[in-house]
Structures are given as structure tokens and as C-alpha cells.
Image 1 (cartoon, rainbow over the protein chains, first blue to last red):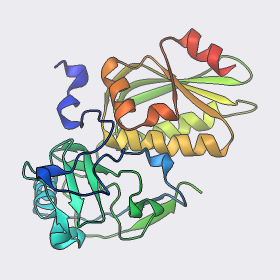
Image 2: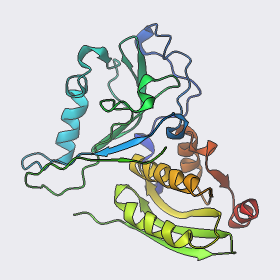
Image 3: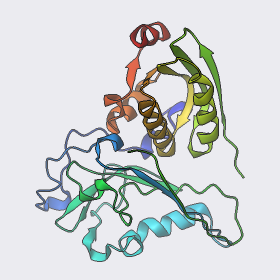
Image 4: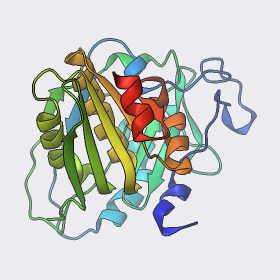
Length: 153
Length: 117
């Protein structure tokens, strides 16, 4: 890998359709195509939440978030992490409802991609269709400033 | 606070087409630079924006997110977004993210400008 493509290992590989992990049958995932962010309907919302943490590095925060994502996201056991973990290209299941593919994952961020028919593509406020933690800090002091904006109609 | 490791220069190649030369890293920190460049590029009667990625050094998923935001703005202005100079690696990323459905990808500036006009 050249320096130019030092991100290559962080991206999922191209797949035409998703495959449910670990031999699980899930009709809302199996054979479904991942779709681009522009192929949903309704408004696409970008939400940015900033919180200052004094005693944790970005990689520590994201490692914890990744490890405890089912609990932190509120999906609990409904979010089924595949046996290989949330590695690029892995498909995690949301109960029998749908799933997400890990599009990108590095030390300080990860991003999901949703398949066609994913119910959260309509922009449910609690739905992490694309969860990304890209910490722009050096270690900050404590503040919390959520912002929400519509980027599409 | 980390700074954007990117510069963008705008060239207007015709009344209708502007090129943004991207040099450096396309990450979350590039948002201001990219949107400023788009503001300059979009001046007047421009109906096509061409992104030159020949000198793109690095792009992560936040960079892809920025391109999505830009694409939405471009679509809203009834403009088109095209690119050239993408390495094979980043062409693959455009394919993985399905952005190649919405952003025209060309091999050269000449081909992109021809397609834009």
C-alpha cells in the first residue's frame, strides 16, 4: 500500500448486495443492495454533537463506542454485531428489521451504510444510518453543543 | 485545533464551467475550504462544477460526507458535479459508496469539460 492510499484498509470492499452474517436468515438484508446517501427519501439530516472529554483520547472514545455500540445506540441486543466485529465490510443486524454495513472504520471514526428498504433512511431522529465519530480535538474541556441541520429536501 | 490539510483553487474555464483543483486531504476539516471554493466556483452562470482530484492525497469517510453535502447543494442549484483525476483506489471508493451514480467520473480535464458543456 502506498502512502497515497493509506486509508485503503479502512474501507469496505465493493459488494453488489449484502449478505447476512453468521448464516443468519434475514430477508431485509440478504440480497439487498447498499444504497447511496442520495437515494433515500425525505430530508436528510446531519446532526453534529460535540462533547469535551478531558481524560480520554479520540481512539479510546471510539474504541469504547465501537465495543459498546449496541448499548450506547439504544438498540441493545437488537443490534447484532457479527462474529468478526465491526470491521470494514461487516454487516450488523438490527433485529429482524434490517441491517447496516460498516462502510468505513479507523481508529477515530466509523461509518455505516444502509441497504435499500432500510426504515431509518427516512430520517428518524434516533436512527444512526451513518454514525461517525470524527473527533476534531486536542483534549477539550467540558461543553456540549448539539446542532442539527437539513442538507436535503 | 487541527487545520485543514488541503488547498483548493478555482478556475473558470468557460461561462458555464468551473474547475476546483483539490490538493491535499479531504477530511472533515476541509468543509470550510470546500464550501468556500464552491461559492467562488458557482459564481454567475455556472451550471457545472468539475472537481480535479489529480492531487488528492487522502480522503476518509468524512471527506465522502462532504462530497455528499456538496452534491446536494449542487443539485439544489440545478448544476452538475463532475470529477477527473481520481486514482483507481478512490474510483473504487466512489463505487462502494454509490457516488459514481450521481457524480460523473472522467479520465481527464478535457473529457470532463467536454461532458460538462
